[in-house]
Amino acid sequence: MENFIYTILSKKRNKLIVIMLVLMAMAGSVMMIPSKLVLARMLPGKSANTFTIYVDTATNASIKETKKVTSCVVDYMTKEKEVTDMEVFLGQGAPLDYAGLVKGSALKALKNQAEIVINLTDKHQRDEPSFMMVHRIRPLINKACGALVPNTSIRFTEMPSGPPTLATIVIELYGKDAKVMRKTAEDIAAVLSETEGLVDIDIMQDDLYTKYDLVPDKEKIIRSGLSVDQVNQIIFLAFKGMPIAVKNTRDQQDQIPIFLRLDEQTRMIEFDNKAALLNKLSSLKLMNVKGMMVPLSEIIRVTAVESSPSIFRKNLKNMVTITAECDMVSQVYPLLEARDKMLKELWQKYDVAKIDGINTFMFDLDVVDHKSGAKMLLRWDGEMKVSLDTFRDLGGAFISALVLMFLLMVVYYKSFALSGIVLIGSFLSIIGVIAGHWVTDKIQLYATDTHFFLTATSLIGFISLMGISARSSLLLIDFAKSLIAEQGMEKKRAIAVATATRAKPIMLTAVAIILGSLLLATDPIFGGLGVALIFGSMAATLVSLFFIPVLMDNARAMMPDKYFLNKLEVKKGSWCVITDNISAILSPKFRDKK
Image (cartoon, rainbow, N blue to C red; front, side):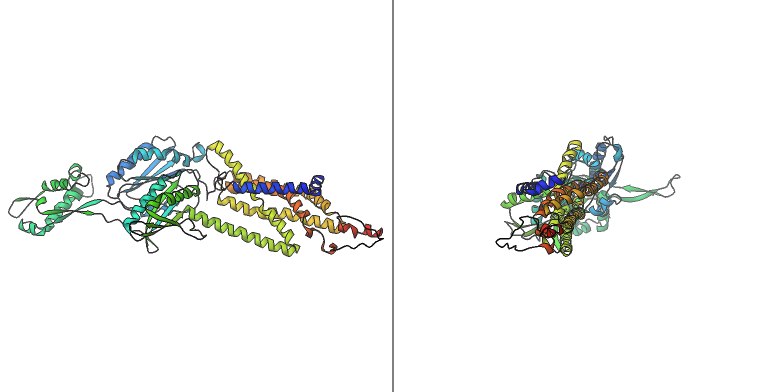
């Protein structure tokens, strides 16, 4: 080992080869991220023993129509052998879990809303993880059950492993004109639906529909010998229904109410058909004070009006939210693809412009409608926003750690060069972190057909490696400096001896880290941390043993301060020794021969 390192240091060509290899490895590993050889994500999905199916039918749908969709979903899920049981919650949300807390399950109380909780066998006893099952059955259920009721949205929600967000992809559209915002939201949802990897696209706003108001004509009612209250009650009784009497029974402690209303066939009319409604009313008759039967159609006006959708506001601004989920992919790449599509495809209807500035809202867009001139703000939220915030904070922590470490090394060595060598050795462990994720991704893709992502836990592992990598560089620098100062050893030889001597403890430290991280690497959430520690330690060890000695040899600060000579003058007739080891000239052995 000593001779090998000395051979590298003795020739500039060898040192240049080592430097070029390290630079190429650094450039190659960093380029794996933009080239998508290594995919980044906040946190990967994990297999669970349960997931939830959210069903949202049209805003004006009845509970019967909602039940029709949920029954279809239940019938399909009963065919899955891994499903143990299911619970259907009509007109309400399921009991709150972690996913329900962040996705608003507690706020569900409408006839067109339902949740189906699917319970599976234990994840350790089945081959198919829950997210793979969702990936497989999602398109089948949407095709079979999604078309039963118009404007039906069926979404699959797994237990989130990390960021508490409303959905993986969340777009908040802010503006003032509600009609323009509705149309823009539909255009944005169309772009998302065409983006590969995005599923469960949903616009969180009420559907527009026509409703019919039955308005009693007071003048006609009075002339017909009826009362307004009598007309209101018969209409309510016919369409809504009410208890009209009670029944007593020996088997029931309380009285049983008798509920009366028109049957389903009589109550139902064709969609948006005013004539059919008038025909139904003509069959309902009331007896006036003179004993004559008066049809309801004679004393009631039917008025068609547009529905009044709910207005959602955030920070005192009108808002429409569009959500989407990612299907087995990271949220980063579909988001960027969808954003590029919006810039290219929406220009015919809107002026779409990027927002300048580097911040966590860097992907936002300004949208202006061509026809109305209405201005809107398209803001990306969800997991992407949380990811940017997290990586920004972790990046800030990493830079702060580098700066503090550099200042500490400057105080210790009184040299910027040696301090920079320590930092370079710490930072170059990123080669192993990224390359390790690429290797692990290939192995996992072959075994399970799923990707292994570079996550926030991977960045935490990279930051934790800094101290270990710095320790290895410090061992080499201190030992080499002591050999030069105390034994008068030549610099190149001292560096080679120090590297060979300290190689064993450096490698033993790396082996301990690798063995300790093997079990961590199998965890679905903290696997990135384990992989970063394992492969980062390997890279840091190689950098410490081969690249750091080259940097040390090129640093003048490696020589003891008291032996620095700026100029050596030799007079004619005297003798001198030509050497690259200045300390040898002043050593006791040399002075005895002087």
